[in-house]
Image (cartoon, rainbow, N blue to C red; front, side):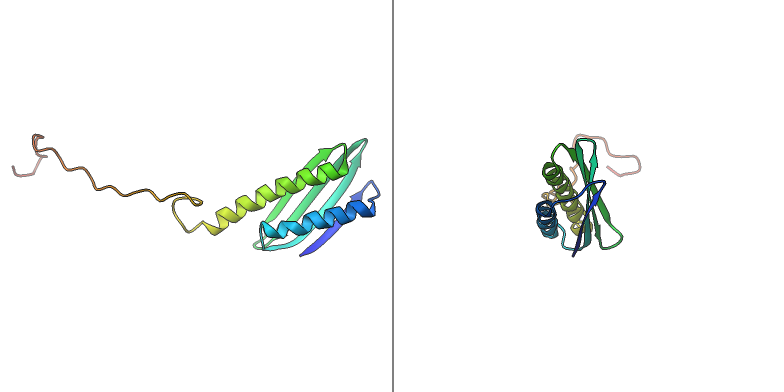
Length: 127
């Protein structure tokens, strides 16, 4: 998996680059078909914005954007959002052929109810 850390309108410290590389490297645990992850930091006044773009198989692209006063906090929030997206996609992708959803118990089959003996027979049926 290729990880790219970029700064837009701001210089990025080595500590922030290393932290972003470490956090983005852990995204592979949530969905193993990731090809590349781009982490983009942007400074808008005093607000630090972090955008993570993850590209996977089958043209799947996942994007998470977060804004905070601290760039490390914005990265943590964006990673958490992307983890949720990847987990949800993986559940849907893995369980798409199985009825009953994502890990739920299958519905129990019950036989149809027999008509009561005191009910009138249907039209066309012999009594």
